[in-house]
Amino acid sequence: MNKFKVLNSIICDVARREVSGKDILVGVYANGINFENLPASINLAFWLELLAEQPGNLTVFIRIEPPGASNPVDIGFNAVVINEKESIPLFTPSLLYSIVAPGEIKLSVRPSKDATWKVVKRVKIQQAPRPAHLSQPPAAPPPA
Image (cartoon, rainbow, N blue to C red; front, side, top):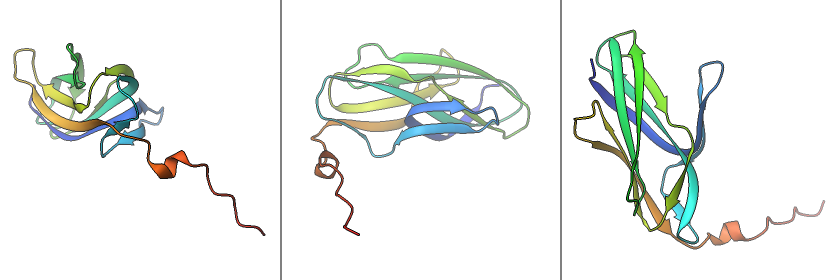
């Protein structure tokens, strides 16, 4: 059994599972990642929610491709699906990536080593100056 659909995919700084079973995502990137200078390094984690088609063993391979990288990062996951149409959350550890050029970081999945990779997430990486509102110190509170 290895049929699944990707329901959600998120790129963030840190993903972890609490003792309660909740997943915690910190520093979610929704509209791209800006760097003042390139090349640069960044810690990133990748969180996915999959929908398993049927109960049984589920194997998922993910590939992370930063722009300009010659070697993508490949990670494999195994899960046991108990219920039909069960939602399965997966996440990678936070790993250090070298960003050498603007472009896109791509997240791809496949159900087996011989299947074709399917891109499920693209996030724009760009070199841009720090926004002016973040470069200035916070305004002093008004006098009482």
